[in-house]
Length: 317
Ligand SMILES: NC(=O)c1ccc[n+]([C@@H]2O[C@H](COP(=O)([O-])OP(=O)(O)OC[C@H]3O[C@@H](n4cnc5c(N)ncnc54)[C@H](O)[C@@H]3O)[C@@H](O)[C@H]2O)c1
Image (tube, rainbow, N blue to C red; front, side, top):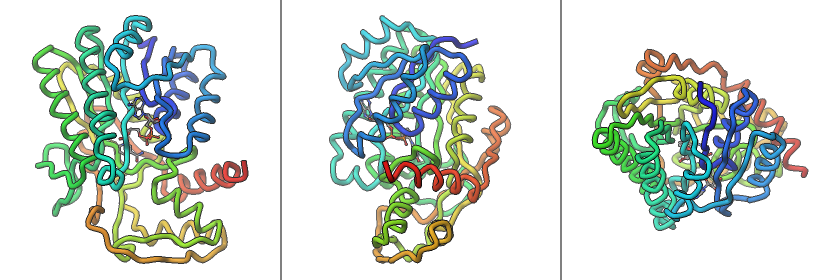
């Protein structure tokens, strides 16, 4: 059984939840996070504070793009397994500041995998549905031709290519998880469901792209954590990539009306067209179900209610 887990991006949305789940299950967790200000650091500090309530949690505030400091942490902590979640996320921001994606998604990934290479331990890392880009056929299976549309998606695809090379060349077991639009309590303020909730509850306009005709395979955070946990149990001898999605696409219009109903308010809509957004995402879960025994359970209505009730208490703080 895994004892010591190194989690990068532990003050981030997914990193916080999986750290908490592992700490609740008696694992020892070392977190690393740069606590950068891509979004409100108040939320990152709040997540970190909750994790610091556990004795079995220790934390390094560190930028993973610095190779020497990453190596020192590996030497000191000697983890049994690494869950690499730290990244510069966001499709739109990658157009504005691609350099931050090179630092946090390429250099940082290379620094992690190089240390994994010498430690000979298992690596699980976050990829993204963004690697698929524009596609015509759905659902999206892991082995189709990738066509990333954003620089963000490109960096995630490059992570997968690097992982493939390292796994073959150095005989490492590596698992890449393609997350599909993760949502839930303590979520990311830059994501549509969070921004819409904030603005609708405050009677502010929301920017809606492409006539609200887009849909996303929204996946609740507990299901994602369950998929990560199952990946820690799966004995992987090469490099394997799995979709972690929900297989039930949610139309943007449905998300908006759910939030409107929750707050009893009407959204003020500002329509814009955007080439950056793909029309649809939908995960094929055949491989994840078969190999990882991954089975998402959370209905969109239940997950969104959990998020909105958390958000209602958080926004007043
Ligand atoms: N949330 C989603 O819907 C989603 C979807 C697909 C993929 N992903 C991927 O899942 C992972 C976790 O995403 P998230 O939603 O929790 O994002 P997040 O932004 O909340 O968390 C990422 C964390 O990494 C940290 N970080 C960034 N660059 C760093 C660096 N150079 N050194 C150290 N720490 C650094 C940030 O401070 C942040 O706390 C990311 O790799 C992301 O690309 C997320």
